[in-house]
Image 1 (cartoon, rainbow, N blue to C red):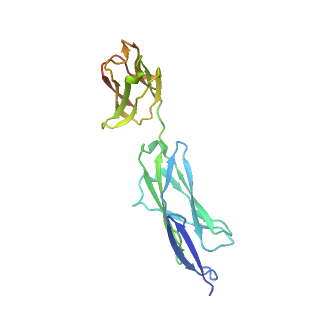
Image 2: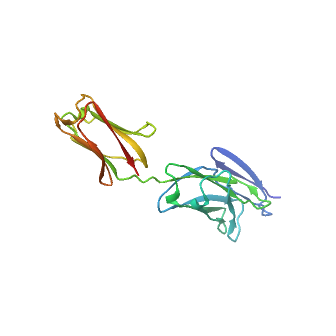
Image 3: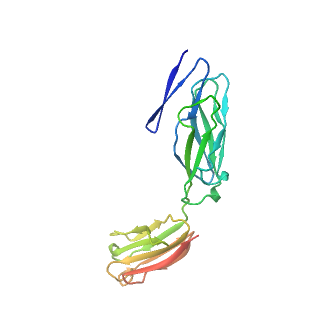
Length: 239
């Protein structure tokens, strides 16, 4: 009886499968256990997952794939799972997985999709029986802008933005030689505190120049100022 050995390399591990090519015994599996990371844009995205078998056939072959519900998160509306297919006369094939449901995905939440190949009876597992795809919604930055007109001493000015939990999410300083600043702020929906500092303690208006600051959202002014002492804080929300 003629036998052969197939070695699969994935994630630094080797897996050996012995099969009988004469009698047509075959192995089937995903090339990698993953995880593969996918960012889902508003238009959706398709991912090709490679699979392989250990014997060829003159006809194309298909294999069912199921979702491991216990190991996965998100909802079935987030994705569409196709059928694993091997073209005729080939050892290699693929599975197409399409991700969408953009509006209902949560910002900055990574979901997990675990797929399982339905291995036919008598077929060995080569590579991996399951594979994992991590998917997250693409964050689209709002049209949120910080504008500062400095006074005569821009090196005295610094600023920071903190979220509702008190963590700094944006900041800036070292503006020597600058006259203005336009900073795009990429912040998710929520409420924040903007604080501007003047190290000399006289603000940015009006003793040494007519400095000012503002934060706008879609062109609308959320907060503004310029006359303060050592610092000034204002709250604003992004919705």
